[in-house]
Image 1 (spheres, rainbow, N blue to C red):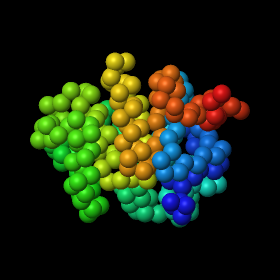
Image 2 (cartoon, rainbow, N blue to C red):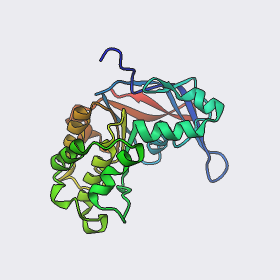
Image 3 (cartoon, rainbow, N blue to C red):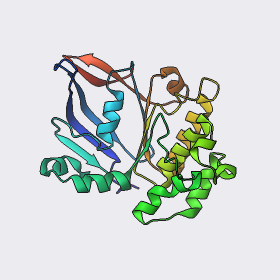
Length: 236
């Protein structure tokens, strides 16, 4: 495992978010490094830039400036500099899994088809791992249903399975328990952490619920205002 590169390395990243009045503000990351199996929580009030950071880490946005950005050893900063959008798209598909607040499932596909989608697009079917995920997330009996036939909590569990199904290096979860309520959120976050460990990925969890992440031993970075920008700082 010593030769495995970090899942994510970020140095001096800055992204200028445009505002409706033309002013906007910046989101900054001085340094961040996550290895396989590590987990990090990003916390802060609504509108502080947490979801913007997820988009940047998922290669969905290009930073205004960046000194270094590597995903599983590949120099993404150089790809951005060369404008190599195709390679960024391929990297995102192969190396990144995303859990959205809304689930983001394709309504025309069954649970099983949604979970298998990333594997099929990559041409790397892993049926045993897919079945294991469905079982661990208590979705086996729902595999033939479509998203409209599921509860909010069930759809969120399917989204977790889909994000992990292609064994990405990095999983980004944007408020994965926001729609589950206080009674179900602790079990859901524990399950996500457990599955991430099983798959060997690095995990970034965005949440407004600091107490929930602390209760599960998740190291935190806070989005704070600093010198006219939103920056990440280690929690006390």
